[in-house]
Image (cartoon, rainbow, N blue to C red; front, side):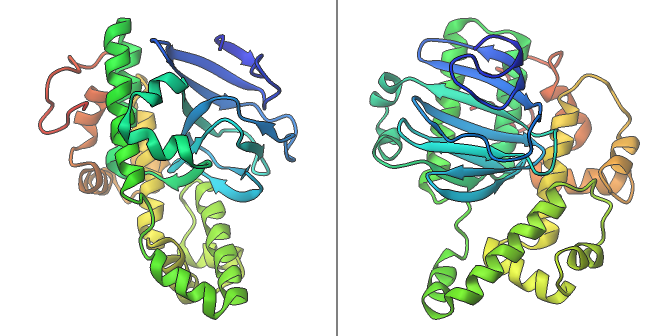
Length: 312
């Protein structure tokens, strides 16, 4: 995986800007930001490696083994050899992700990877602690690590990710949803479409839309949309919007442009800097200023414990 611009030379993929983070034995870690030339579906590619894709920004559609879904900054895709994956970018450019490609022999030595080896691809949603662990991992690689430490950091992160997946990830309320499938499949399908449309609008917006505007955009009332979204996703619209905003803030804090927090509050639709700080602290456990020190390449020693945040 060379750094630079263009399609992955190993196969025909969407053109992107690639940046390799590290390549210790058996694991390749890199970041990509898609450069969209065609907003339609790419040709389905049969995966030939075990891969994790962790959303960082933007929104796009994926079709994994024939099932269509939406990927955004909170999404996690786990694929295995033989899975068929196609993507589309109807919302334009801007989506970016971190990718880990893992050799089979690495997984064969991990008892927590048995389900990954035995099942088809999985699509889910991360949570804020996993988002922070993702951001810290990238920050550590940017600071510069030797191969030994790279390998250990990646194995620790894989352990966290596989444990998260084994716990069910984002399956809150799934039992109720499964029961509804048997009772009213047509209604449930319509509700799923409505929830996905709301995700599209929120993930593709600049966080300035109000609830009424989102509801009008998807052809619903605010009350109905709120109720359906909660039931289909296990999350309120506000909680999902805050997840997206905090994920965007973490991504921005990882850059070294030192934009004032008051400016970030305006950019991401918070009432003011205090509101930004409260929301970020409530989700991540630490204020933005401290997170900026942790996530930038010039931050302090990542081996030290940072007021309760560790890199394990």
